[in-house]
Amino acid sequence: MRSPEETRHKLAEAVLHIRSGQATSRKTLADLMSLSPTTAGFYVDHLIESGLLKESGLEQGKMGRPKRTLSTVAEAGWFAGIEFNADRIQIAQVAFSGEVLTAESSPLPPEADAREVMSRITTTLATLNRRTGHPLLGIGVGAPGVVDPIQGLALDYAFISGWTQIPIQHRLQKRFQVPVTVENNLRTIALAERWFGAGKQMDDYVILGPRSGFGIAIVNQGKLLRGRHYAAGEIGRWPWQTGEQKGEVHDAMTAPAVWRRLSGMSQRSRLPEDLRKALLNLDARSSPAWSAVIHDYAQVIGQLHFILDAEAYFLHGPLTALGSAFCQSISDQACLLMPSLKPIPPQVLPSELGDEAGALGAASLAMEAWSPMLTPSA
Image (cartoon, rainbow, N blue to C red; front, side, top):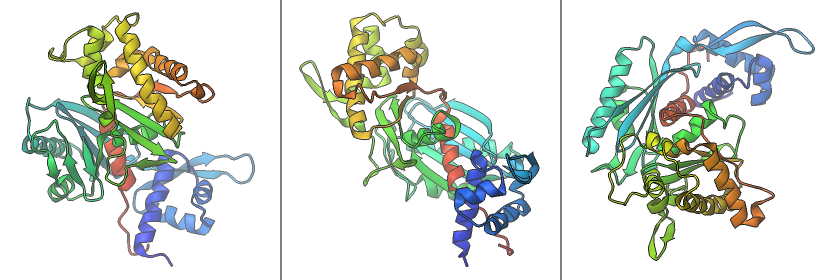
């Protein structure tokens, strides 16, 4: 006999399979979870009685009796996803069924410190919760910098004053009385690709996140890689030399750095308000600066590919404005620089998800962490 905790885990797993569309019937659910038909039926019946699943319609297989179709109930509740950096807060609202209900962005005041950022996050969540008629089931947070997801702590982020050892999970759980899950924001973007983007059918892929900093998120065999100290993917700290000047990767390859290089602006030049639009309007593809940026990116991606051998590298952030030609040029140049890659070229792709990807991923984090309350019959 399973313990209550094991039963909750299995019920949550069943919901994930049905929500993703991998399981559409009791039979396919039993096969996916390696359960007997009786046990799978028990879980389905419990979830239907709890108002979380519905069984309707007829799905005729190639052989045998027609099968009822299982689906999740959108009105059972919703998940909130929050993702932020030093400039803005993104929030997404995702129904229990996985349908995106809303995705919004709001700017942060210049020089906002840790106290101000947490206040804005709490206020934004409270406002959305008040205007929603269904219960809030969980909150996912994608925080920048180094994050301890086990303790729900934001450990450090250089671009927000005072952003050190922030107990995000504790504060939001106390305020909203629902489970709160905290993760690095690039890793939440990796979850967004799994649920809403091109990573749905992939077990091995990488998120490239050149924004104000430069990090990556790694999905290996279907799991997020965090590292012993939760710093896996901080490649912006790799040593990098530009001419005679020693520096780090993020000095040359963040979105602001690339814009300055392609536009010919100095390091002290003020950034445009809309960096994505500014990059989109650049006509630099035939310039030496374009070739130099491609060369630098190819070096980094080529080395990553030798280490990770991922199926795809999804580019996120303002640099997606440079289009598929930018990504393909990086792949091609990597193979020229490292001929051993030619049989296994890195596939660099601009993400089809927009700026709300981090918030959607944070909501996905809450969805994946959710488990149902047990009724006495379970």
